[in-house]
Length: 309
Image (cartoon, helix red, strand yellow):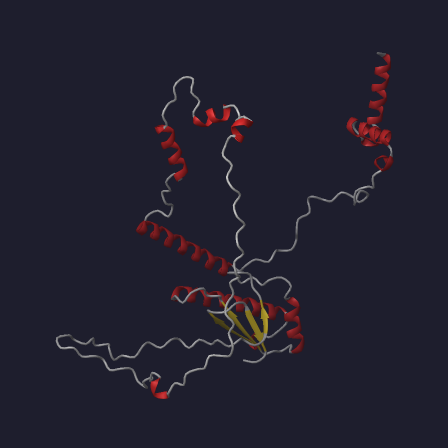
């Protein structure tokens, strides 16, 4: 008993050394008993000798955020989408369908309800066949032996016929080709039927969109926001370094996703916010405000800054 108390005292005394507890000392003792690479001292963790960090420090720089106008525009779009969802659900019913149970569950329940009950002492055909004794060798040999089947004759391999030469194209006269009229056909007139008044009105002209690729240095924005992506300050600094006094033409787009008037109006508004953000960055680089010209469009992505219109 005294020996146990002495061993416990030594262990407790070792616990107070090097701020190690009972588990750490026991682990070190076990590793030394095993020897080898496991008994070597582990390297200290990174930064063990450095002072503790001050948890009271907070970032002093403001993180980049979209402008209040861009956040208000995004909020308005979300509210509009929510109202459209509510109206669609009210008109067409709930969006969550009533899904019936899977067919397997219904078939299983019907089979269980319609299965006949077995009499006492019967196990069913499957269990009876499993517990039946195996057939003897005499029964197997008593079966009449059938003649061995004849070897199948090897059939000829099927192959496509060889094609030699090319098919000759038949000559087609120009008179046999369908003729395309220079003007649309006349409106048919049928007795007793009034021809619509807009039958002779030409079709509506499609908008003449500018599909050319904008010139200048391209700038990327966060999706649906006027916040510039990180790592693009060097491009603006390079532009200002070449022409410090401008002029600069900023052409921004709002990334419209449809041809509806409301979506295009929101895209133009977002494009203006993006152009204003680029203009503020140029002004911060000491570019005169009267040397910056901004323009917004609904289609496209990001912004382009050029020194020519």
